Length: 259
Length: 259
Image 1 (tube, rainbow over the protein chains, first blue to last red):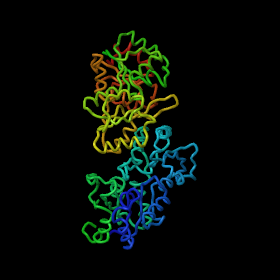
Image 2 (image 1 turned 45 degrees about the vertical axis):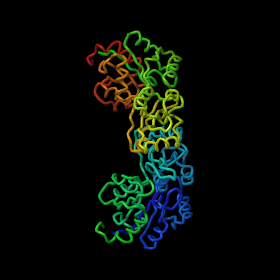
Image 3 (image 1 turned 90 degrees about the vertical axis):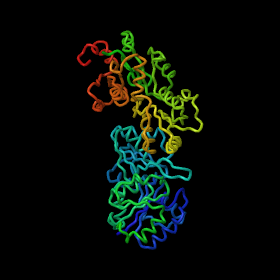
Image 4 (image 1 turned 180 degrees about the horizontal axis):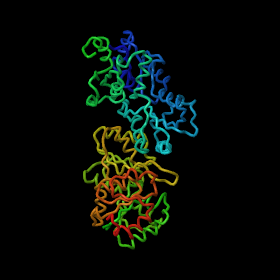
């Protein structure tokens, strides 16, 4: 029984600031159906308010408290442990962390810093790790879809720091089970009653499967032919796009033999 | 029977342009002994001529044809396969590759580009890899010792690109067996008669062990307490510094029961 739906944003609803074909209408139909919905993103170049503004500009109707972001999860993780992070993050995100103590940092926080991934800043983070600071990664996505092609996300730079210092990062966004569970809890849905829809095999679909949700891979955004071969578990589905996912949710999900 | 000696440079003979204590004298004694010697470096911020000039300025007596560098091995690898590399390397190295075709690149070559590791250049390399270009790494060392601390070497950025594109790099410098074998061949020594001395557990010592040489880890340069726990095989030795290595080579290596 599907009772809740988690939706990835970039690559599912839009790419490069443009809604994908049929996505505006599909979200409207999903909303009208009454299925509880949350938006869960590993985008780490924008705060929740910035994401909300982008969605609204594109014509998607979303409320702030329906959006779960990897940076918000990182902030909660750092606060709970009273860590003072060195921020290797995009300048857009500085407001998200401005009230955390950052002098004499004792942790390294990595997001998709984009052009902020300079050698000098990577080296500063590396030296903190060698002194024992924990490595906190908002996400470890490999790449994302931009209008002109695929671009490096935070994951490769997390992998670089892990390799250099011989450490393993704590990930606060997808595919962390705690991240999916928090979103499910806010829907008052069990993970087993919740579907996660995304274009990233690792962070979205395999992560959801591992957390007990049902994952659906859409063939838009960063999807590339052959990605389905990397799906783990037998429950994950592959559908062409978000509109097809909504068709399935509204017509077939609660009647077909797979549920 | 030790007949040949391979020496790493930075961290063994010098750090940050300054000879290590006793290193000038120790190299003189090694030379006077008649033991055949080669200098094998994964430094990828300098050409062989630049390295030779640095060694000479510091007072080390070395001939150009005794120096084996990872960039020289990369050049040979690319030429043999008629590859046109996109150069993610330090500007100092451009002369080493200036006669290779670089238009419409069909390979990615990574060295320690230092501040040249910008997001945009990493992203360009990534996109070539996603189009099928092979990833050639001069080295995959984690870090090196600078005067003010440890700094990121090429390895972390190689790991980043491997993670992003889901590929594995071909390494042309240490610890590639072919690199050690070429240096041994120029000495007319079998690997089993050759000692490799370095401060990097992975590239120098474990790499040499895997190629059939005897590895010696010195506790200078990038060495950190506990590195010996990562040594592989039972033959590797640990000695305090290069001067102690020369003492052992001249006094004990060919008489003690380990040979």
